[in-house]
Each structure stands twice: as structure tokens, then as C-alpha cells.
Amino acid sequence: MAGRTWELHLLLLLGLGLRSQGALPPPCESQIYCHGELLHQVQMAKLYPDDKQFVDMSLSTAPDQVLQRFSELAEAHNHSIPRQQLQEFVQQHFRAVGQELQPWTPGDWKESPQLLQKIADARLRVWAGQLNQIWKKLGKQIKPEVLTQPERFSLIYSKNPFIVPGGRFVEFYYCYGHIPNGGRVYYLQRSQPPLLTLMMDRYVAHTNDITFLRENIETLALELNFWTVNRTISVYLEEKSYNLNRYYVPYGGPRPESYSKDAELADTLPEGDREVLWAELKAGAESGWDFSSRWLVGGPNPNSLSSIRTSKLIPVDLNAFLCQAEELMSNFYSRLGNDTQAERYRSLRAQRMAALNALLWDEQKGAWFDYDVENGKNLEFYPSNLTPLWAGCFSDPSFVDKALRYLEDSQILTYQHGIPASLRNTGQQWDFPNAWAPLQDLVIRGLAKSSSPRTQEVAFQLAQNWIQTNFDVYSQKSAMYEKYDISNGGQPGGGGEYEVQEGFGWTNGMALMLLDRYGDRLTSGTQLTLQVPHYLVVALPLQLLLSFLPW
Image 1 (cartoon, rainbow, N blue to C red):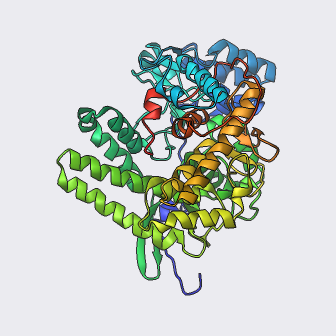
Image 2: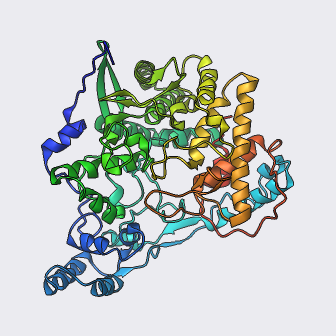
Image 3: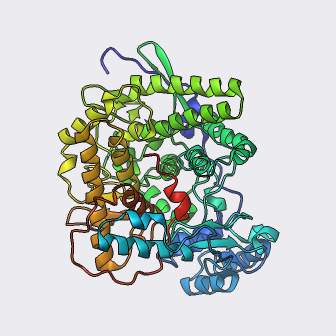
């Protein structure tokens, strides 16, 4: 940083701003699902292995009545309710998870999609056929009672049916001025990485439904405006000012779905630091990387979650997603004949490209890196470092081949079962030795943009490695997993806050995308006989999913 100076605007976007404000508001007003004594006592009693189970349960009666009866029970036990009585109270006043949902079958499912005919390897073709059958089991529709009595549910009502991700995640992702972390009231103050505009692009490319685009273009603008208003940070570097975005959730208290873990972690810190910790944990959850050494480096103990400082990092992937969205919005407005808005988004993208090059790109290493506003670039390896390739947010075609050299120099290509989330083993799930489907996608499709046959061949080999891992584990377990441990031949992943989940949408989706793209070359490399699968949960109707491929 010698010879360089940086200065941050908008003090409220800093952790220092969090400290100066004192107590932060809760993630929602519900005294059952977001804050209050009932939530605290139930979650700290650890009635369920996963804290999320309780806050996903619906009420069997009105919340005022539940709170009144809880207050009476708490008074009777001097606010220290025995576990057995607490368990009985929950069983009496709450319903099991998922009672508010009913089955729905996607209308565009096909028994034998064209994808299957592209797959040369017979075992992979059978496997893909089995994955295709799963789509019929995944659809959900919310019952009308959630609309008429929303106060009894953490689930947010949607009139439209949807596909759930699976495992512990039995909610949808829906627009609410932004994309909430999930379709629950306790998620409303956290967003998701901004990919709604890309979803619209893939939908329009598949359907040519310009009317739908015209009707919803302002919804897309609303989401991007959310990031501009709530997540912008300005950095001065070498006498120039750059505006970029970061993950930031200035809301207090433990995350309701991980309440006991957050409360216990906060107990290790001075009382004055606890609200900051909880806000940083929520920001980490907003990133999708909950949790990773990405958000711990630069803290007092980079292997401890108590050092999390998500809001101090300007992430490569987030800003690449927004760069891509700005380009797509410019294209959308051009198609709709609004040249003023088209030029506005072209200008925003140009400004962001200049900031990416100035702050995040490292010419010597040949990659982009998260920018730490207190320490400069974080030069650790993460697959997200190559997101601008995937998003098409780079100006020099040679950047793709430079990225390949970066992967070689980092020895990433020596991993035969997938690209790890990082090279640090912290015990967090978004670190080594876990590998995740969307991170493979960032690298594989990024490299595939190269005109170099060698770089394209590396992209194929990475695809082969990932398909082999997915297929081998499926052959042993009859299941697809949200993440994989690549340190010992490829196994279901681990670490983090909960047990590895089966049936994860992005794993299934990524496998089908790679089979669609490289099916004539991919091989199973094994003689194992496939077993009949469990009914897994994946993320998108196959016909629409395959339309997402901008190869």
C-alpha cells in the first residue's frame, strides 16, 4: 500500500458505524420468529439439532395467544422453563415444518429431454435420466391459509408455485424489492447475490417473451437500486474515487435460524462487540459463502468465526454479478426502445469495469482479488477470483489465458476431484477441502470463453473431474450433495454449521449443464451399477435450466 491512500465514504457502512449506533434493529418485528424471549429460550434449549427447524414451524393459533401463554409459562418458572415443559409447549402451539406447502408438478417436465441423446457414455445417460425423474417430485405450492393468516407463518406467501432447493431449505427465492436470503420473514433484511437480471436474460433467450420483460423491467431495476442505495461503498485510491458494492446487513441479534450458535459465539467477545459480530455474520450469510476464510482474513484470529469482518471486503464475485447485470439491463432497455436508460446502464457498467481494474485486478498474478478496505487486496485463492471471466466483465481477451496461468501457479489444477473453495482449512464449509458446484461453474465457463484450444481443454478436464466426483458418490450413496470433500477421492462434504444436505439444486443443475455441454466426451470411468435414487430436491425445471447455458 506504499504510496497509496484510501478513504471510505458513508460512515454507516463501516463496522465503526455499527458500534456508534448501539443496539441494532431485529431482522423483523415478529417476537416469535425474529427476536424475543420465546425465540431465545427455545433456541438456547436446543430442542432440535438444527435451529432452523424451529423458526420454519408454523403456529397452530394466533401469535398473540401463543405469546400470552408463553409469558404465563415463563412467569411460572421464573423465566427458566425446564426443557420438558418447553418441548411440550412447542408441540402444543406449533406445527411441523412444511405443513403449509402442498405438492405441485412443473408443467414443462419431459420424460425424455433432448439432453439425454447428447450423452455418449451409457452409464452417464442412465444417471442423467434418473436425475430428470426427480424434477417431478420437487414442486411446491403455498396453501391459501398463508395468505389469509400470514402472522402464523415465517414463510412469505407467493401465489406462484416454485421449486425448493432441498434438505433444510424448504423455502423459495422471490422478489421483495430485493431477493431475500430465503422466503422467510427472518431473512428479509439479507439479500442474495444479485442474479435476478441474469435469470430474466436466460428466460427471454429461451422464450423470446418480450412482453414479460417489458412488464417486469422495473422490478429488475428495483433490485439493482437496492444494492446502490444500501450496499455501496466509495474508495479513494491514487487520487481517484471508485464506487463498488459489498455485503452488509446492519441488523442486530443472532440469526434466528442459527440462534444458539450465534449467541454462544458472541459470549466469547466483550458485550460491546456482539452486535457487530451478529451483523457481520448476517453479511456473510448474504454472500452465500456462510462461512469462509474470505471473511475472516485480516481479523485478530483468521481461523475463528469470531473474527468475521464481511463488510470490510469488496468482493470480486458480487461486483462481477452487478457488472453483468448492468450490461444486461442496457441490452434490455435497448430492445425496449428506451435509449436513455440503456445509456445509463452502459455508463454504470463502464464505471464498474474501471473500478474492477483499478482495485481488484492484479496484473502480476493474473486474477482479481477481494479488496480489504483496511489492508488492500486479499491475495488468497478462491474460485470467486475468476468471476469476471464467467460474467463477461473483462476488456482484454488475454485475461482468460492469464487466469489459466494463475490456476497453474496456485496448483489448483492438481486437485483431481474438483476445485476447492479455498486453500485454507478452517473447518468452515466454504473452505478447503470442500468443493461446491457453483464455484466449478465460475471457473469452467470462465475458461471456456478463451479462444485458446489449450484453455478450452482445461475447462473440459475440470468438467470431467467434477462429473466423475458427482457420479462416483451418487453410485455409492444414491444421492447428490450440496458440497463435496475432495481431499480423499471425493466424498460428501462437511464442516460448517449443519450436516451436509442431500439433493441440492445447484449440484444437480451443474451436472445436467455439463452433461448438456460435454455429453459427447464425458465418461463415467467406472463399472459401478447405479442404485435407485432417493427423491432428492433440486432447483429449477430442466427445460428452463438448460436454457441458462450461454455457451
